[in-house]
Every structure is written in C-alpha cells, then in structure tokens.
Image 1 (tube, one colour):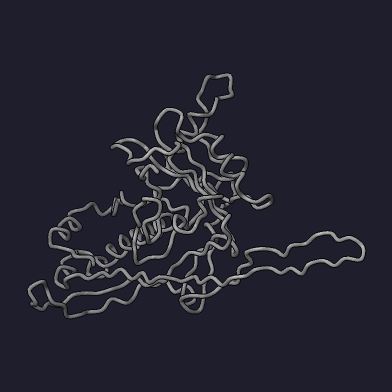
Image 2 (image 1 turned 30 degrees about the horizontal axis):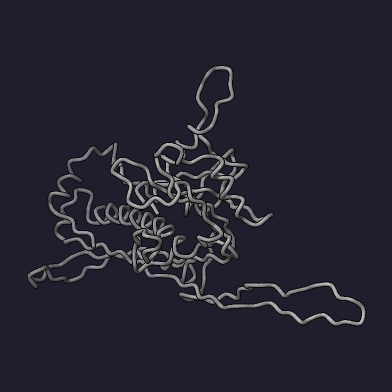
Length: 327
C-alpha cells in the first residue's frame, strides 16, 4: 500500500516544474519489452498470449513411438507416443494506492496529479517484480531465494538442470562475498510452444478509478482516503524442457567469468533448428564477455561491448542478480 505523508507533498510542491519527475528507479526490462538491435525489433520473450480465464491445460507429447525395420515374414512391434497434461496458471497482481484525502489535496497540482505520481511508481515497481519473477519464481530452487512465493513459477523452477545447464565454476559451495560477482546467464527460446507470457481474463491490465474510501489507522481511528488499484493476472508458460537453459556460477574469480566458450556450450544444448532467441545477462557479465574477447583492429581500441553471440541477441537486464548463491 502506498502511504504518502505531508513531507512527501512538501517535496512534490518544492520541485522544479520544468524538470518534473526525474526517475532514478526506472529500469530497462527486455524480458517484457524486447530491444532494438541493428534496426530490428527483438520482441518480448515468448511474445504473449491472453486467455479467457485464469488457467489452462496443454497437451504435451513426452516421447515418440519406437519405429524400426523388419525382416520378411516378421511383424513390427506396435508403438505409440506418450502424453501428459500440464496446467498453466496466471497469478493475481493488484498493488493498491491509498492516500489520505487531505494529504492528496495538499499537492499543488491537485489530488489527481498526486495519485498519478504514485501510480507511475507503483506500475514501474510491478513491472520489475514480474521480470524478477521471470527468473527466480515462487519457490526456492537450487539454494536460490524465491522472489515472491505467491507469484508464478519462474525459469529456475521449470528448466532442466540435467540437460540445459552449464557450470562456469565447478562445484564450489557458498555465497559470493560483497562486491564479488556471482550470477547466471539465461538462454530463452520464445513462442507459443516454448516460453510465453500469459495474461489472464483476456489480458486485463488496468488502473481502477480513484475511489473515496473510509479507512482505519493502526489504532482503529477512521479517516477518508483516496484508493486505486493496478489489476492484472500474469503467468509464464515453458512448454518444452529445452526452451530455456542457463550458465550458473559465473563469478569474478580468475577463469570463471563469462566467455564465448561457455555461451557456445549453452547454445549447443538446444535442439538443432531450434536455437534460443535471446541471451539474458547482467551488465557485469556482459563486461566479462567483452574482456574475454580479443580486439581485432589497427587502432588498439578494446573489443566492443558484445550485443550478440552467433546472431543471438544479448539483452542486458537488472532483473538477474549479481549476488546469487554459488552452487
């Protein structure tokens, strides 16, 4: 819940009107928005799809029939595919804004402007929460801390660590010391049968009307407030186990940073003809990759910041931590 004070309003009213709101909290979120590389728009991961309700089932073929040659006058054993149903859900995200009516009225631009300032911050915080959930999900997995236990499962819960993982640092145990990088790189293939954002209730994502409500303070005393909610239902589908993979235990230790060799090992785990569409990493990991590359020029300039690997876009993000547990 957003709780504004008279001190907040004093800051609003004392700010320069031309510069307006300078937002130091906003982040680039390629997980949802994609980026433009070489003049081409890289779409959001998985695109997105809307569903009428809040969940759905998919039919998944988990193995093909066994087929072989036969000799004359002998038969061929019967075979069949194996199938399973998987349930995908959307999860409710409704962060509220609630401001004392008289506090909101003290904003020199009026109550509506006061609520709009808070709504923009709340929306930005919601987007950042959803993008972090994309990786870390709703339950602790492989010694990583869950992002939000009430949200949707993330890549960490659903990827296949046996077939879709590369270990950059061996089997060291512990937690990276302060100031030391310990991070992951994720490779993702998007599409309706792979990684897809899901928005429930036909994609409803709205800001409710401002309502005047009577609320109680911590001591049970009533006062009038202005109330508003952001409302959406969001989830994540990972249809095939090889739709995503990661390099784990990337650290700042010598010989254990991100390299093209590690990226090659990760990409090689995807099926032939079905490569990942994006590589997500932190700025620190991207810089490690740059430093690992040899500059090829006559001026002596260092290698440029990498933006792709074998045609696969590299998308830096702040939703991946630089301080993951070392596994």
